[in-house]
Every structure is written in C-alpha cells, then in structure tokens.
Image (tube, rainbow, N blue to C red):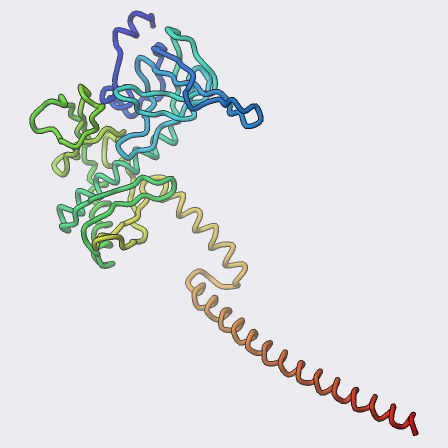
Amino acid sequence: MSVTAAISTRAYIGSLLCQRDSFARTIQTVVISCVESSVSGSTDAVHSKPKMFEVVLADTVIFPTGGGQPNDLGKINGIPIVDARRVGLDCVHILNNPVEKDQVVQVDLDWDRRFDHMQQHSAQHLLSAIAQKEFDMKTVGWSLGKAVCYIEVTAEPKQHVLDALEQQVNAYIRKRIAVSVVEHDMNEHDMPKKLPSDLDGAVVRCITFDGLDNNTCCGTHVENSADIQCCKLLHTERVRGGNTRVFFVAGNRVFQSYQSTFLRNRKLTDLLSTGPENFVERVEGLKKNIKELIKTNKKQSKEIAALEKLKLGDLGTTANASQSIAKQ
C-alpha cells in the first residue's frame, strides 16, 4: 500500500474499518501522527511513568472506547496497543513505543476481546428491543461490564416475566435475524439531538435487527443474531425511581460461566460429600451444627470458669488454715 493511496482513503469515526466490517481483524495503513501523550512521563525521577504515545492512523480495525462499548486492543507492527480513545473524529491508539509518521504499519486486532464485545453489545440491543416490544419495559441505561452486563428498565419485573423475556430473546437468536448497518449524515433532520458536540460532521450509524429494532449506535455488532449464540439473564437489582437493572451474559460468556459453575460444584461435591441438589440443605445443616457448637462452647467455658473460681477459693481456705496451724 502506498502512502498516497492510504492517505487518500482517510477514515474517521463512524466510517472506520472496524465499524464498516466488525469481522475485519487486520489492516495495513499509514501513520497520520504520533505524539507523546500529555499524561505520560514525570519530572519526578523516582515516580516517573513510562512514556506513552498517541497514534492516529489513516484507518483502523481498533474500536475506541465510545457509545458505552469498551475499546479494542491489539498491536501496531507488533507494539501492544494499551488503550484506544475517541478524540473528536479520530481514533487515538495509545502505545508504549512510538511509530514513524507516514510509515506503513500493520494493525492486528485482539479478536477474542472484540468478538466478546460484539456478542454482549448485540445481545443488549436485542434484549432491550424485546423487553420494550413484548413487555413494555423501556431501557433507560445499560452497561457492558468485564464479567457481566445489564440493562436498566422502567419496571420491577417478576421472575416469571424475566423467564419469558429470556425465552423470547433466545428464540429470536435462533431465528437468525440479519443485523445490518445504515449510515446517515449527522445533519439529517431525523437524527438524534443528543449526540456529542465534537462529532460534528461524522457519519451516524443505525444498527438494525431486521423487523425488530433500529437504533443509533457507533459500536461493533454481529452480522446475524445467531452469532450471539445464547443469552442468559442472571439477577436483578432495584435502583432509583422504581427502575430495575437486569444483569445478563451472552455468547461465550454463558459457556465460561457454566464451566466455572461446573468446576466449583465438583469441588463442593467432594467437600460436602453430596451433590449440587443438596448443597443448600447440607450447608444449612453445617451452619446449625456450628451454631450449636458455639453455644455449647460458651456454656462450657462459663462452667470451667466457675470451677476455676471455686478451686481458687478452696486453695485460699487451705492456705489460711495452714498459716493458723503454723502460728499455734
């Protein structure tokens, strides 16, 4: 790839390769700029931090933190990307080592991390859409966490409602619904009014689940609902104003969670000498036994203390009697 050709195809937030093709894992592109980060280094030699460099590329497969989705990681010419941030319309890659301006570089994506984000984010869109369409629960907030995710809904759903919601979400996943991206100009009259002011001139993307949902979103998503694989609702948490956070995991996280639970159950089976179906009963029995032992221990401690007091009293009486005899 020539430097001229790469610069002529400069991409900005909204039209980066990672957004045009979420499944792209590598790209050869050109370094637009590389400057030392203003937050790196220190004048204090004792507490100095390693230098960090902010790198802007002509295009990238690295998605920066934004729109509620965590950033991607990867490498530029083998140099680890430690962070990626959106600054205006640019994706700024944070490196521990510099790269040369105008240099042609290869960017490689941490695919496992990216695909996990795609599964969780697409599951969130699907979960929110079905919650509102089928159960009149509007999503007013959401979070893609490192271990679990949640949507915050304007309701306090009972367990049977959550069970039905989970079933419908997984039914839609199995329907293999197409997930597509439609790009719009930010200045179109029907665009959302709450977009960040520093996105002026950016391409606005709408993520569509065919026949079900259409939402503005800058993140990376699967191409088909089947790529989500499955979705498992976990627990709920009541928050301000009567809202409820519904926690969930999707895709590979479901299998990882099950594997962790299975291995934990195997260890507990050995420790408790019973199967998972009896864990609660066995632990409650152990807690009851411990409580009784503590009660018995306290009672016996008091009895021993009383006996020790009597013993000391008897010793004192014997000593006084011996002294009286000696005086006679």
